[in-house]
Figure 1 (cartoon, one colour):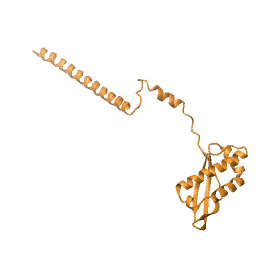
Figure 2 (cartoon, one colour):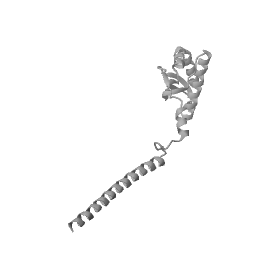
Figure 3 (cartoon, one colour):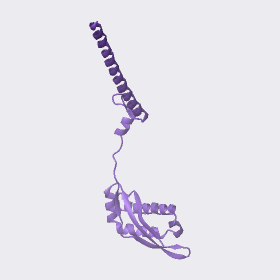
Figure 4 (cartoon, one colour):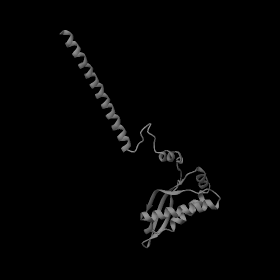
Length: 170
């Protein structure tokens, strides 16, 4: 009778071991499926499952980032404008932006002519125009055209933008 009780106890331990192994496998499978589902939902690729060929090609053909370089015109551009029947003063600090240092070196070389032309453009503006954001944007565009005309006349590369660092109208 003692032999029968030990024989029945061994198969019960094996079935508990199988149950534990089966539960561990199910838990690991559930975790793996949740990670794969999250990656798929967020638009990522699952390693080993192949990625989107279009996204891989687009990353290869991207152009490298080129930072802008700047030249600050140290002295303010100061002039008078007509506004409401009286003379008003305008003071503007300007910086020039370019993608390459060659254009800024050329602008620095021809700075007396550029400053003169910029003061003339600023002086030809109206007081009412300079008080609005649209008027200031138009002034920056006209200044850009003026600087680029001067640089083209001298056979130099052009700049990309004129930036206002400080803008005072009295």
